[in-house]
Length: 364
Ligand code: BGC
Image (spheres, rainbow, N blue to C red):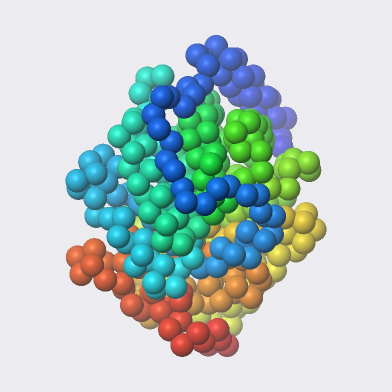
């Protein structure tokens, strides 16, 4: 665990006590209602976490910012896109779920939202894809660890039993990019709690957990994983260097927002990428945990030539290190699929899934 200053330790302990008191004083987390759970052609059968990681292959993040969640008739993403994704060579979708805004005052998930989710999950599985259910309310979680804890636990109290009979291809990711208020210490406490909730209905399904501080690789050593639970896949996100991948992005602060024309692909750039991934591999080997790269991508404001170079290099480096990956994202930014044409952004698609199967890094 990372050393903390006395002040941070006091704050962390106080927040934890507050969180425990608050959770204890809340009504019992909502349980699955009377609605029918989705049905699947295949039953669940446990799979070793390393075997599952070996099967995830190439993936893409989907649905995070789609209007379909508010109004199923207004979806940009349609269930038919799963087949398009599979046919392009992807094996996995990470379904990005911002569920908090679809909960009522007792943190019960909206039945219509659940119905949309069921349709998406059953279609994706039917089309031969692995499906990661990723709770993605990292912004709320970064602001308020108490609310985060209550809602994340409520989410898994409902989603885990609902999908308990789904085949092993469906995996749960407890929370995307814990950050700021959700300190490494609070995150360790919280994911243990959410995992215990999941384990009451899904004792052997593989669950994905990443480190705090934005799922950054530097914080893998902070993770306090339960030694007696080997059905865990560890995730990290890769956007190095952010000056390149997030140039011009409005949500990352003025210094990076004002950048433009940043290129990528020097010898030093490749060396940093390989050093970073070696570090993750060393952690994975030392801790005997399989690793999944859950997000990587370069924002649309970088020049296409360099986005392609970076995307290709990161995807190949991940594969060389044995990490399956999921590109960020299908749509609406870092875009690999253009809904206005209902077609792929081919330079990006071909960078991450080379049409000729070429696995060499350009520039190396
Ligand atoms: C967030 C996106 C963001 C991306 C890259 C994701 O986890 O959900 O809003 O664009 O990271 O910064």
